[in-house]
Length: 547
Image (cartoon, rainbow, N blue to C red; front, side, top):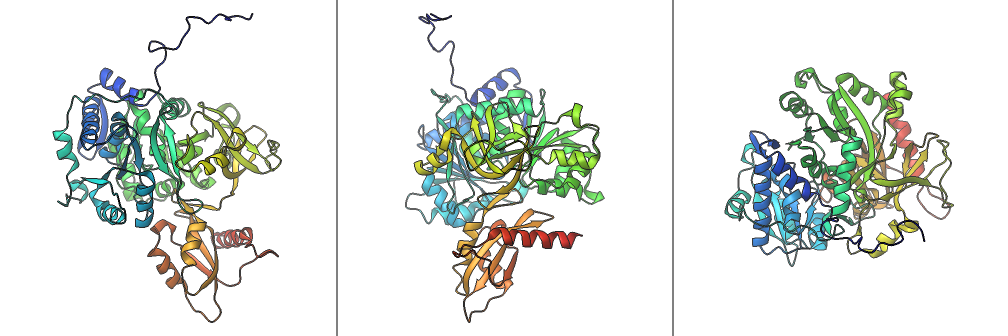
């Protein structure tokens, strides 16, 4: 018999096992830092005591509207306090939070509401028409709660019951419904439709709790950081940063509209210490005119993810006082789970250009992940030579439960005991991975994922279009934009402006092609479009234009 062979009396019980949940972070923060600033938005400031009270009232409000444990509550909100409150208030009544991208088109929003089965929808007045149009398409639409923002120019419409009025009338003594099992569903986040219709990604309480712990370690966070929420809170729940903040007694500073001026103002006026953002945000900061910049005397830690930022941009950010860390992840992994851990003893002496190139790599696994690997077509890890390509795969505590109501897609994504990302990368000799291409032809435009399949499907509805292919075109402002290559039907006519306008009527703005090229498409002998030829063409043209 081995050591500890007799485990009688060593059972799991309430004294030694509690389900992990980010709700615990807020309870703790309200108990030990009740007066500390928790949320800032314009001239509104909420302490941790205030935040817990508002979260409790939101949970009570939802329960009073008939929401039961396991039900879905959706939001169409920008980065305002109500969205922060929903991060905790929806699970505090046992429900599942579904934050919807406010930039989506009516049809997609209607699909998400229908597929997820939301029973209540919290809507900012700016997006009320979108919400109402989407709900009008449903047989069982959710009940709308309007969230006005008069200070931003969006006073109440008067068409729905208002959020603040409902909060004021709700029970401040409502008992939170804590998860009994940390595997219980916490959030439902929809992908950007990489193969057409978006898929519903389900998060559990355990994963959200552990990614908050891992991020504190990886981002080198100490007590009381001041985090500016630039990343939309509908993107992987803001990379889970809102759930993390009570853990370290930090302050969430809400940013409704992302501009370089507003970011510089927040850094100077609010003492922002951290924020995350797509490369487009970095480009805006380094290219902002002098009149929009504000001086600050501390280093601001920045997470960036998406299309790798140009080395020149990273170098300029460092000179301005920003320390940029490149991270990588997907909706399916709660946001960032791979980080470019900076090796100061090895890389600090490198020239600026070399430093920027090193920073552009995606990196290694976060602490709460068990592994990040690059697998070749033979199923084995690729050699760490910086050249051989394979598919990025991940496993660990920050991987989704699966795709909601889609067991086939879940099984495919989890083949071989790893989550298969669909992204193509190489592994360098030091173990750091670097994305080489996107196997699923995803276009990352301003931090938004655009499905080439969806855009192609839209354009194919035009009467003059015979065949089309959509690829990513490099863009200085957005990182990438959709570029459409089109073959017209015999005898048919159409111009670029006409096709762009046609797509804009049917797609979200960020999905609309920004350029259309007419002519025969390159194909294989079997008729398959050779997208790699088109991608090379637009890259070569972009490089020639910038030379």
